[in-house]
Image (cartoon, rainbow, N blue to C red; front, side, top):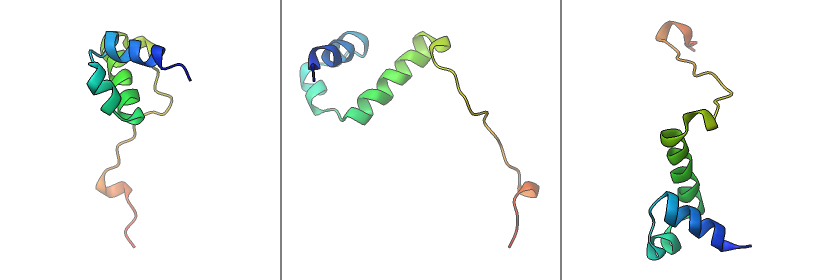
Length: 62
């Protein structure tokens, strides 16, 4: 796999140093990139599931 692209994203967009990039987990890198997109381009990501809030009277008691 070509790591140049991932290092470019981490270094340029997220501001990670080379040391930070090699110590970060792939899951954390993906979360950081999603947060970057939400902050800089909120229209790029669309939530498919609406957020649902449950109150105490909607929960079943057993």
